Length: 82
Image (cartoon, rainbow, N blue to C red; front, side):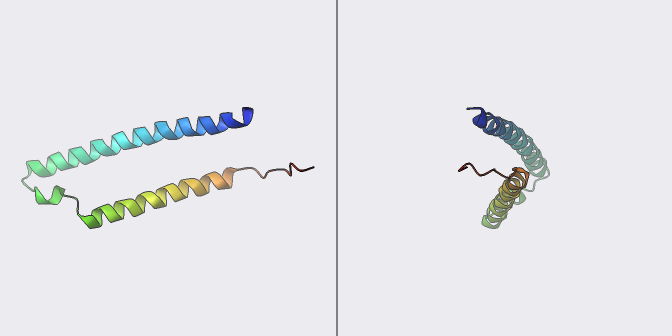
């Protein structure tokens, strides 16, 4: 059971950081969209398919970097068969 505590802590910290990053990102996006609308540039606020593709690729790369960071930090496991 003690082995699962670091896993739970990792999920909790990840959820809190993800929530915070999502809220900050949404705030910046909403602020930029409001500014663009105020200047009368309605078309520039619409996300195109290319924008979504770039965003998804960016997210995949971000998650991959986090996963690689976690793999580098894992200590080598001792052989349990002995």
